[in-house]
Amino acid sequence: MSNTEQTSTATATNSNGTSTGGGGGKNDSTASSKHGGKNTNPKRKNNKKKSTKSLKQQVTSDPPLECTQEDFDALLQDASELADFDEASSELVDCARYGEVDACRAILDVWSSKQQHQQPPPAQSIVNAHDDSLSTSLHKASANGYLSTVQLLLSRGADHLPNDSGNTPLHWAAASGHAEVVNMLLSHYDASKQQQPLDVLLKNNFGRSALTEGFQSGNTKTVEYLLNHDSAEEDRLIGGLDGKAVDDDEIGVDNGDSGDAVGKDCSVGGKKSIVHQFDFLRDCDGAVENGPCVSIRELPIAHADNPFGQSAVEDTTGLGIWVASLVMARWLASPSMVQRMRNKTILELGAGCGIPSLAAAVHGTPKSVSITDLNPQTIENIRHNIELNGCGGIAIGSSIDWGDISTYPEQRLDYVICSDCIYQKEIVPLLKKVVTELLKCNDPDNRDGGGSFLYVAPDGGRDGLPEFIAAMKSEGFECVKEEVAPEEFSGNPLKSGDEEDCFLHFHELASTVYILYEFKRR
Image 1 (cartoon, rainbow, N blue to C red):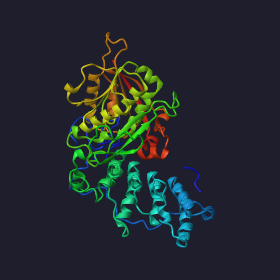
Image 2 (image 1 turned 45 degrees about the vertical axis):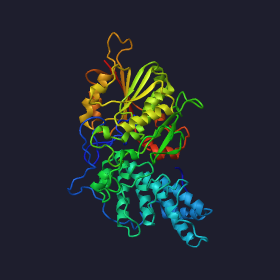
Image 3 (image 1 turned 180 degrees about the vertical axis):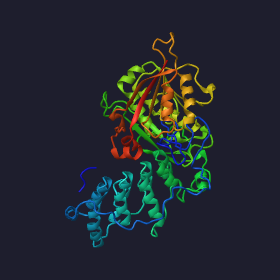
Image 4 (image 1 turned 90 degrees about the vertical axis):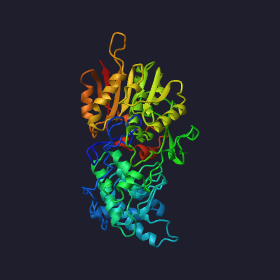
């Protein structure tokens, strides 16, 4: 049946995934950038009338037929020939994944009737069919933005269920920035008398809510729908799901013993973490069988629905992995960059989990690698990841406050790297100043010339990004590279090659265009 398988937020600032600093960090569209300026977080709502509110309207009718009646009759015949309920369920999930709404309609028409007479009756209704990870047809359609398929499933009574990672269809729709799907889900379940209204602050197993995922998407309308939902009240946004503040030590960072189960969920301080294994040469030139891998522990973000705190040092978004850092890691692991960075000094700003720096250390032979951030928990996780990869002899995790020059290293560097760190125009002068202060100057003492600043960011949707690129092209720097990242940089970087796992954690890889920049110090 199936043929195949950010912008500003509600208040005009922008976000990347969720940590400041792309080195592994996503910066929510609401916060001032990593280490600069005050936090103008739109999650702290005022009492003004909400501008974008989902109407409480239950979906009660199917979308119109998209194919001809003759073609639909053929689909009904195909559906009736499916061997059993399990095969029909699997086919429905696949068709929903690809937005084949009329194929879904045919399966539901045939098998909803059949299951009424089946003995023993199936464990769940056909409309709630799911795959091995408990992701339902509604998950698949919502994740891929197929609005008519979502409408069909809702009209047939689909439940809003979590999968085995705690992600709901709302999580996935929000993460992908599918605003109209988000709106339909919220309004349908708000009006439903059979189910409870949705909760935009409900967290998955990694401590992330639909609201957090919406901010990561960078889609303004998605964020507005989520922020203006009844469940996103100010006291809950500030205090957590139960109205109480969550202590930072509830997330905690262990002594290194809990992250050894590579590729598996782990428990740190009572919260779930996960260690990913990356092969950054996978499907790229220079790939070798059983080549080096980079292991990275990702922790739940503390205060996941207000992760930026009142100051930069409270920002915990770097505990998560963000996609720009994976693209940067691919770049640094490429043979040409490994050769260039041989015996060179490297520093990463806004490193988050430290993925690009560790890719440079594991795949190459740099002289030294400094992996920097500001939040203490983020720094501790960086140090954990350094030890996890056996890079203690070459890499160090340390704190840099961009606004405090006394925290800068004394020696100037060959390379400064940074991924997706700009979300507000106000931070542009500060980041340029930091880069200028850290890089080697182009003077007679440096036979290789001035140092290089490497930056990766999406091709749009970041408040302040055009101004930052313009500033870097002006006095003191020369732009020697500005190009779209090669297609293979957007491929699945997981050593396992598991496509479902890659989509679950890093779905932006397939949907976002990233630009590689290099600026040479004059």
